[in-house]
Length: 72
Image (cartoon, rainbow, N blue to C red):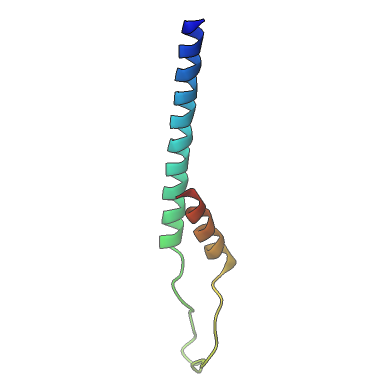
């Protein structure tokens, strides 16, 4: 009985470690995606500057930021 409890405890510890490794990999992946995301708008040379226009960030970047925040 005692051996089974130890095996179960070791199994749970291994599962937790694997879960933590997966979270770390996901955080690293999201960080890389966020660092390579565009930082602003790309305008053509002939475009007139926009004044008082609030541009909303792309939903992909927002989603990645939310996922990263939830993992931390």
